[in-house]
Amino acid sequence: AQERTTSSAAAAAPEIHKGLAGVVADTTAISKVNPDTNSLLYRGYPVQELAAGCTFEQVAYLLWHGELPTDAQLTELEETGRAQRALAPQVRAAIDLVPTTAHPMDVLRTAVSVIGASDPTAADARPEADLAKSVRLLAQVPAVIAYDQRRRRGQDPVEPRSDLGYVENFLHMTFGEVPDDVVVDAFRVSLILYAEHSFNASTFTARVITSTRADLYSAVVGAVGALKGPLHGGANEAVMQMFAEIGDADHAEAWLRDALAARRTIMGFGHRVYKHGDSRVPTMKASLDRLVDHYGRPDLAALYDRLEAAMRAAKGIEPNLDYPSGPAYHLMGFDTPTFTPLFVAARITGWTAHVMEQAAANSLIRPLSAYSGPPERHLQG
Ligand code: ACO
Image (cartoon, rainbow, N blue to C red; front, side, top):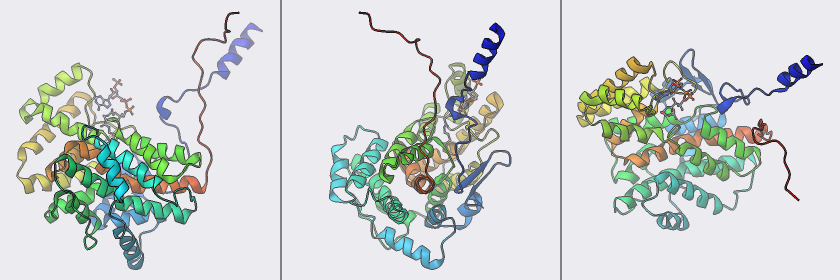
């Protein structure tokens, strides 16, 4: 009897999947990450092909609808977005209330919340209403980011221009001009590469919130919060802080040795799913190389290469997308704390596609936990 009790207790012990590592939580038709073949497909298309031949709006349409748009469908999406690029006065007022000492992700999280709270259709959960909200957010997030970076620099806001494409207008609103093609193209590539990546932490957060039947804006606000962390989207700005700390390529090996000895996490390296390299890195690195040539910054490229080689030699860990995108955004002229909001601008597409997929076949996401606290006890007297 003793033996039977022990073995049945052992059988009842739940298997814990810490960090949900290795857990397949649901199906998705939006993207496929394959670490064995080092590939990433959006709706079946390799992301490298999309980055080579598509606009960001085409990729947004693909993620939302499952197919690339026809010319007429693309024109309709572009026109709807262009008409909604300006921020409502209450959104600007809300941004102005947030101190400039706050992180730009906090500003963006607040602004998305105000955009949602101002939308009379926020609670309308019909697919066409959620799609309209997704288009609106995609159109307005660049204005929030540009407005915030400019106010921090003491610059007047630049109004959106409906004669410019999404990427050109984003850069124009931020810098007051449309930069050279090489910059526009690198920014376009980064947005496409960042757009979607299956059940990453922020997307899963959005799906959890949607599973409670909360509205799309609530899901996106939660996702912004999840993306802020340095183990996720916050890594792209942390990479640039690390580069500033190292300073010179000649210091890379010694800096890494000390950092690893101090058990520091090296930002921009490693990935929960990719263990042999991130499928998106070569494409972004090629864009970074073009920016390095354009801006004449071989010192930055040297630091990049030396640290990457040293990390590979020391730990066998490869860079993730945040490693090339951080220095790329730096060269483009964005302030370092603005990098993670740029990730949001791209990932809004993937998040909202997942929100709509979750809502279409919903089941409340509610895992179990294994209790590890004190046994049952009672108040005295
Ligand atoms: N620096 C130093 N060591 C690392 C790093 C790193 N960046 N990444 C992994 N390791 C080590 C871990 O310390 C661990 O070593 P150990 O077995 O001796 O304890 C081993 O590699 C396995 O790592 P895990 O932490 O188990 O891997 P996990 O899948 O949990 O973590 C994560 C993935 C969080 C991305 C991790 O690699 C990391 O912290 N990277 C830095 C942050 C970063 O760049 N995030 C961006 C993610 S991609 C994106 O959002 C676009």
